Length: 288
Image (cartoon, rainbow, N blue to C red; front, side, top):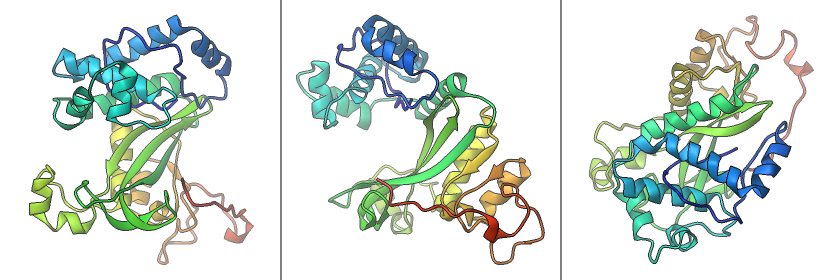
């Protein structure tokens, strides 16, 4: 289940909604939720009610619930206009206000979602998954935008990139955190940052550093995990590896887990001892 939680006090959703489920053990329950709108509404209300205190005003709580319901619908294109129409609003003003100006405890909302996922999917052998994704952009005003590689396109494009943290067990998987990547072209221009509303204390951080920040936040927040995985960008970072080794968590991101100066006689916390060539090689394609 992947949820972007941001609402409360909804008196519907319409009956054409679909529950997003990535689950190997509760497909029957998921199917029942789709055909039972009363149950869907109860569970939706429980989830949105849980995060209600994170919104400063009741109006924004209601708008957030409508936005979440729209995000979980089968709308082919999701933006403030289409979400407003889906909710029965006459204009996108409320949706735009929620995203741009409403007072919301975003950190608390993130923590609530993380705890919700852990309560429903937590189990032995859990894995934290680090990956990045980009959104293609046309202009220069979107925070963090520049010409940079994004797996969304499989090449360098004008884009905004963020690093995501997922939580996976046999019961299912979901995103639990994200950090926006700010290139040096942004952090070196404090005037540009101020104009975009970026706090003055935000400095440049590499993608592995952002991943480490999210992993530490999740573990310190009560999440338990046996492994961390990602691609070689994260596996090559010594700071991230040290953090995981200190916590006794195995890691298996990419092929460059060992730096050139690493002690090759020391057993790898993830791979079994033995020749590296004995390990299977797996191929992957560009992300979408």
